[in-house]
Length: 253
Image (cartoon, rainbow, N blue to C red; front, top):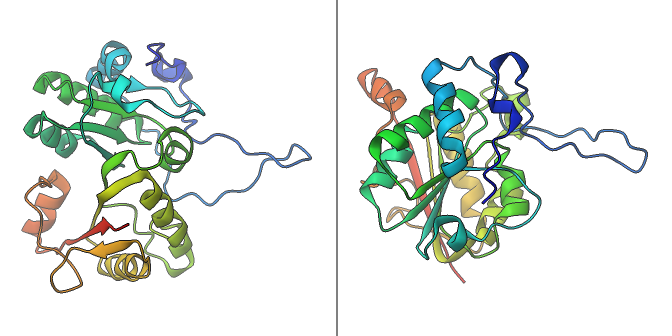
């Protein structure tokens, strides 16, 4: 693992949020790309900055255009769960602490969230968690080998409420196909959202993919699985009587 601390973490005054690698055409012009997320810079607290400065060398993974050796990354062979968009990392750290026999890799584009996750992981004394600060699509395409993940988790992605923005939703056929390639045989894709139109969209997209089987006995949504801890955001939603839709699909070969 590269233990060099990226320069974007060293100073709030000079930080840039370059989490997407530029793509160029034959004329050297930048190609336009539809993003499924908003790059929120945010201001780092002193604790988050300290966590990035102190704990990134041991737990952080720099983006590179070559596959990771997950066994070498964690120093052992164990099932790997990848979480895309872990927010502030509270539920991810909770899962890693509750399942020391598994390995966890989290990807997030919100830098304060990365710092908060590192701080929480250190406080919980977990050693089976690694984090990345980059675009998840590029990480999946370039750094994750096919058939190497036991589970992919995508909890509460941006729903892009407006109809004209729906194409920005990350759960699209091309993305689902990519996730399917990275999952091992019988691997699981677990999605959750609190926006019903997005849940219906997710169910439609997932149900159309031949190599996934819906684990719901009703062919629709799952009760909240015990392995997904409630986030603070979700707890607040429950107090306001907001619903959450979980979908779990198993890869079939």
